Image (cartoon, rainbow, N blue to C red):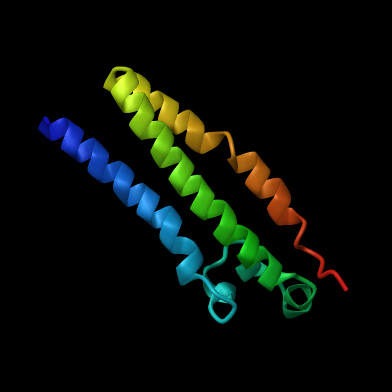
Length: 112
């Protein structure tokens, strides 16, 4: 394995570990500091936000996201040239993000 490949795999591993780690680092007690968007809400709006539901959704999504994009990169790396595999990986990272944003917005109002 060449140095460039080691750097590439290390970078992707770090990215994927970040996606896996985020749901375990953000919880109900520190979300008001670290959760983008939630940290700018007023106390009244936070009370109406389904934080528990969102955190469960985020954990499931980011775990699947990390494993799936890792798998896509590994398969494409051994199937195509490195530059093509990297493009496929970036596309795989970008495609699910609109879904994450739309589904995440559904937690703005607590369900009673």
